[in-house]
Image (tube, rainbow, N blue to C red):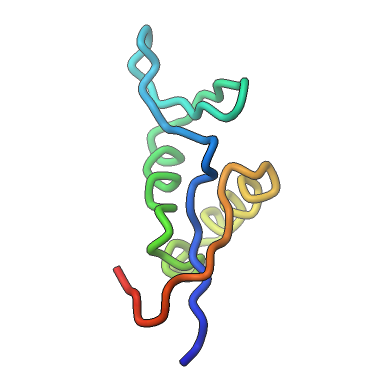
Length: 86
């Protein structure tokens, strides 16, 4: 069986709504980073159940976004349990 490497939001990262603007923000360590709705939705999908391929689905923009946030350490890779699928 082939190993499945999934993506998940970093342990010290959290997506919340800004109390003033109501817009999504990423809380990561000591920083608060404003997000647009599409970025927030995509980061919420990084829940440890989906692979990069499942998230990207042929979109170069999504691929580039995921590569960028992975470099920033907002998401991490995880080896999924055998047979576990969403």
